[in-house]
Amino acid sequence: MVVNSFVMIVAPTVIMVVSSYSVYRRLKVAAAALSMTSDHRMRERTKRNQSITRTLTGIIIMFLVCHSGKVISDTNFLLWCTS
Image (cartoon, rainbow, N blue to C red; front, side, top):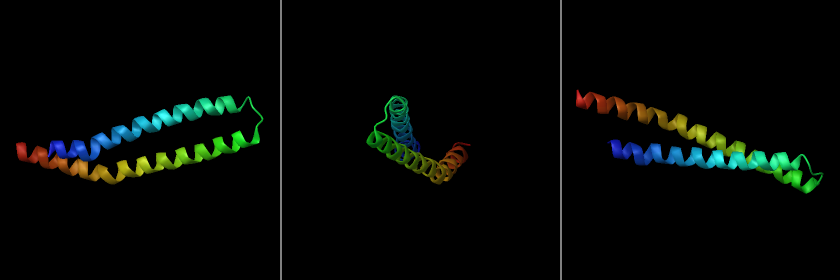
């Protein structure tokens, strides 16, 4: 039960959060560099990347919301079985 919860919920959540944070940091650096340039294509590309990052963040939040019930249920069942 614990291994199943780890493989199905904890590991994917950690991977998604870490990779999203990495993308966010890189986009923040790119946005700072973009403020120094006047290239129209670079601005459009950065806006698109920021939009994609917002979408990715929304997907991660939905994953956490949808799977939190299973985590709570599994934890409750595990505690009930051990007592």
